[in-house]
Amino acid sequence: MRTKYHGAQLHKALQWLRPELARGSSRISAADGSRLCSAAGRWLALGGVAALLLLFATACSAPPSSQRLFAIGETAELDGWRITVQRFTVLPSHPVFQPQPGQVLCAVEVTLQNASGRIRFVMPERQMLLEAQGRTYALDRDATLLAARLRQWIVPEGELSVNETARGAASYQIPLQSQDVRWTFASGLLPWSERATFSLGDTAAP
Image (cartoon, rainbow, N blue to C red; front, top):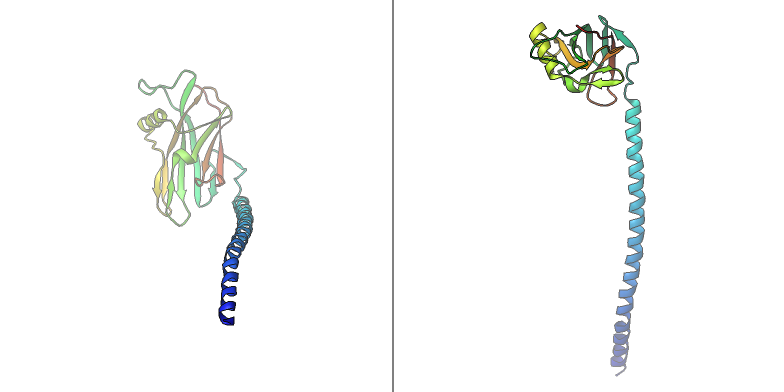
């Protein structure tokens, strides 16, 4: 009888304890979840800061852009490239290829050598820019066709093998009577790529 009595009491105690354990388990899980979320937030924040610091360090460690201004006929060497501007020419008028009023078509004749020891690629639209009167100009289709027709100057582009040299011209349409015209070649496509800038002088009517 005593055994049955104690068994009944133990059964009642277990019946009362089960809900309490369940509630306690919920409270512990909620607390643990809150702590886990807080810790995860801190780690994510630290990870974001670390990523920004790494990006900043990478940008700062990149080679700075060249500050020297090269003249026509000089050779600039940067990041495995040898670039020489041979001449800056205002192209003569043509019945088919006509500039807009107040503009001229011009060409920057260049020699570009791959001295990096590996295959390199040239994207003229991204690497060859002309600046005049505070504005930057990309390649112009009509000027390119006119330069090719009159002088057989084709813009250097595409793949260059090791030690290969490309000759041609980058052609533009810019305002007439522009002063202190400059041409820039970027060694790569990244914003911090080394650059060589050449002073071309002024433009006048052909």
